[in-house]
Amino acid sequence: MTTAIILAGGLGTRLREVVSDRPKPMALISGKPFLEYLLDYWMNQGVSHFILSVGYQYSVIQDYFGTSYRGCDISYAIEPSPLGTGGGVLLAIAKLNNKDEPFLLLNGDTFFAIELDKLTQFHQQTQSDCTFSLFRADEAQRYMGIDITSSGKITALNAEKGKAGELANGGVYLINPAVIKRHYADSKGQVLSLESDIFYQLLAHGEPIYGLEFDSCFIDIGLPYDYARAPTIIGLEKV
Image (cartoon, rainbow, N blue to C red; front, side, top):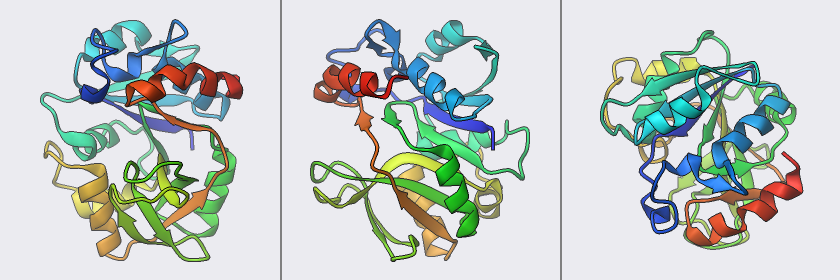
């Protein structure tokens, strides 16, 4: 697995009071765009091709990175109008070079320092079609809560109802393209939510969805408070 899709098309309304001149993934952390830290980290994990799902002020991202970054290929899936996180994923999947190989899916405003080899091994061992990276939430009602069995199979997705100290969705996924094609082959261009539409649909149809907990640093820069402390979190990981 060498391809990662990064969702980088959101409006970033919650962060607008401190970052108003650029799309949220390009928010500066110690003078460097947050998205650049993500690319660096995942390239070090073995990713060699990024597909950036972009929309709002996409030219800022495109002008900065172009089609290659440190020798790594970059492609763009540009939303003609806001399609939601799910619609952005469907647009980006069409640009996969290998549609039989699992792809990594990332949020452009979240850093979660997981071990990709460990996630891939778990994905293969469980024969999962969609594998979530999980963490223990430190606050309630912010992240999607997850119910899983002892083997890691996800049995429920509790959108925005996760409790502090319980497992939550870390926004890093390994997905087999075939499972998306089975349910959304004719949905390109539709407005969809990844969390509220696609994942719920896959779970409702009994698709094998698993989750693996990682005790790694996690940060979502979507709120001004977390954006302000991002340099400390990212610095600890030396990306």
